[in-house]
Image 1 (cartoon, rainbow, N blue to C red):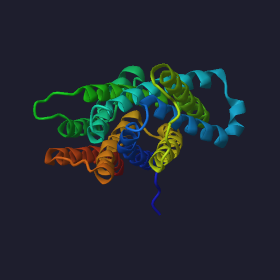
Image 2: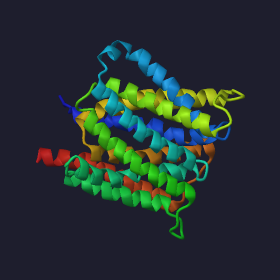
Image 3: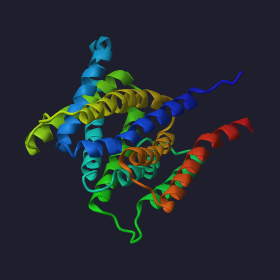
Image 4: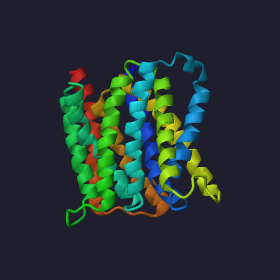
Length: 293
């Protein structure tokens, strides 16, 4: 009988998260064409916050100041990541934003070594480098320049890397479900504040089937499911491997952007995707081969 370690189960669950996240790029891009950016984020994350509070209501009595503080920090970093990413979608295609968000794979090992004193395993280092090369092939244009949207997305990738590192740190000392509730609620509050201060309206003037579908996918699957899985599964794997698994997000973004938005990849982009898959393979299979030897 084959026994699967908790680390590999965690990795598989994290991969499922990237599928949902990858689908949201084109969905969000089309949604913010119909309503203000931060208003969309506000409603999305308030739906998620309410659902999380209902699901984990019995645990809320165990909420303490330390969990609250760390959850708020996570929420602030998460807000910054989503803010830069969502605004970037106004300037760049969903496919490009999805690819560049994957640059967090190169930032995460650096931050992990500096902040957590965790030196990535050699297979993770190789996987990170291959993944970075793949993202580079998929993102830079022929003149090797970046647009406003691409610059905003790179800033987003920095905050995504910080969020991965902090999640690894905080999930090991707190109830991950409570941590998620506080994190997502903080995100909701910040998005609402910005929307009320900067945008003409918070609630959509005209609801349609697409907006309802968009909030269902982004709030329930890409937020409630995704962040509960991330905050729980990261206890059983490493920050660098998490970042490399999350590098598959732009690949799924490209697939859904093609299916839902008709965005097509170049040959170079497909080559980059192949290199990214190789990076994930090295990171995942390398330690197993070494263990068997």
